[in-house]
Structure formats: C-alpha cells, structure tokens
Length: 382
Image 1 (cartoon, rainbow, N blue to C red):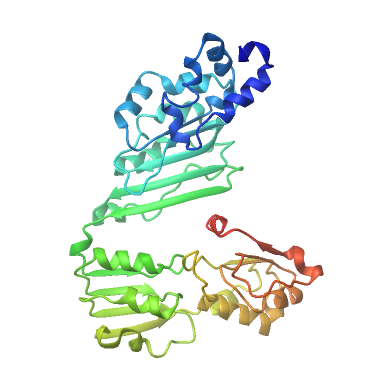
Image 2 (image 1 turned 120 degrees about the vertical axis):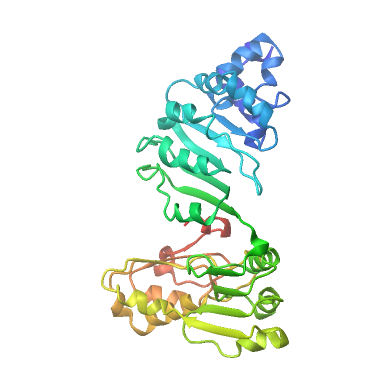
C-alpha cells in the first residue's frame, strides 16, 4: 500500500498535488481531500494527518443547500481542527458576477474562533445585514496572519441606505501582513428609471465597456457628469453616444479639450461642457511633503493606451521643475512615457509601470534598479 511503503512526508506531498485547482471544488466528494479518504482506512489516516488538505474552505456560489448542511453539521470545525492550532487558514465564499446569497452570517462564529489564523478571507455580501455583520460583528484588530482579502458586494440599496454608508470602516486596519485586496462592487439599483448620474471621482474612471454597460442600463438618462476617458477616440465616440442624454459634463485635466462635439457628430448632447481639474497644481500645493503619486489604471489591459492626460501633465511638471518635488520618492504609472529614464536620472525616485506601456527598452544600467515593471494584473493591487 502507498501509505505503508512511503514516508508520511511523501504521502502528504502526493495528496496535496491531488487537490483541485479551484478552491471551492475541494468540498466535492469527487475531489481531494474527501475522495482520497474513501480509498482505504490507511489513506484516510494519512490524509487526515496532512494539514494542507484541510486548511482551505471556499464555498461555491451554486449550492447553498449543501453548504448549509456542511456548516450545520460542523464540517468547518472538523476540517480546520485537522490542521492543528497554528496552521494558516483560508475561508469564505467564492465571488461571482451576480451572487445570490452569502454565508457570512452563518459563519460568523467561525470568523470569531479562527480570526488570528486566517491568511485569506473571501467575503460575499448581498444584503445590508451582511455589511452590518462585517462592520459590527467581526472582531477588531485580531487578523494577525491575514495576507489577502476578496470582497464581493452586490447589495440593493435605497437612497437612504446609500447615505448611511459614505465610509465603511473595515476590521482589518491593523492587519500587518495584509498585501492583496480584491474588491468587486455591484450596486443593485433601478437603473432604467434614473435620469441623472454623477461619477466624478478621478480615482476610478470608466473604461469603454463600462461606459457602454452603464448607458445600456440607464435607458432614460438625461444628465450625466463623468471623468473624461483616456482611450482612443473611435471607442470614445461609440461609448459616449446615448439617445436620451441632454446634458453631459466631463471632468478634464488641463489643457481643456477642443472639438468634443465632433466626437458625437449629429448625436451630441444639447449641453456638452467640460470642467477642468488641475491634478498637477493639486500636487504642487503639497510638493514639500509629497512622497508618492499613483495614477490609477485608465483602460483595458489589451489596449495600447496613451498616457492619461493628468499623468502626462504631471510628468511634464517633473521635467520642468525637478527641484520642486524634492520629497518625491515613488511614481506609479499605468502608461508609457518617453521621459521615463530621463526623470529617473534627474530625480532620486523609483518608478513602477506596466510592461509594454513604457516606450523604449534600453534603460541605463545605473538607474535600472529604480524602474520596476509589474504585470498588468498586479497593477490593480498597487
């Protein structure tokens, strides 16, 4: 038998390699770890002694009845107890585009018991009470081992409940090992009856697909305020067209754009205006203490996008006035820049950018260690 002829460490490695790639598939009796426990008593004994088989419980979004039985029968405690007292754990619900439910309330006792051991949490919230559970029910300042979090929120809110959550404090603010956060938020609203929308935050611009989806949902939209996108003009023309839109205000970094009406042709809104937001001047007011500037990802990963307007303007300020930002040490760019190696040479700072978004592959050796290139997927985590 395998378990009698091989050292336990080797058996554990073999069983760990049998685990399915998708974490939520571990709960199926057709996959490891439960499958290997059915082969023989020897295999079951060896499997139960391997903590890597039992340290992860991620509930799939499609089988709430089975999940409820597993929780009610003490399955979570049995799995986690097989890992000992200090082994790091991963736990939660698998996120989806349109989640239909959550186990956050049923599993609150698990969160309370194992909070200090979680290295990963995946939380799905579909009701206001789930947000309240996260805000008030979770323990505070005890997630010592937490390294990553996935937050999937699809909550139907009225205007009153929206006003009640202008800022949601998380119970993870003292998690010293936390490095990665994935957040997906879907506001369940009566989009078709909305006549006015304002999305003026410069931290999160809409890409072409998001513009089309939003305008497709808001069939009666009359007035909108949005941040001017930085993608190519053909995509812009198609995405910004809306048959009922009468007034459109675009938040634009300097200099003001000319010829916006030409993007629309005969379908231009009757009232098309632009509001200039001067990012460089905002940074300049903080230049004596400004240490880091991060420009958020502006578009789609498979597009060869030009630099966002505000990023180009700020880079120009660095070139023209290098001494004005003597405290600056790190710039994060989601775009290509002809001046990258120049201002890294002039200024004592580090640049983080995406591969393929920085023109020129020849970087001088003395400054190469101060230009960090990261994968596009990792840029969302910066």
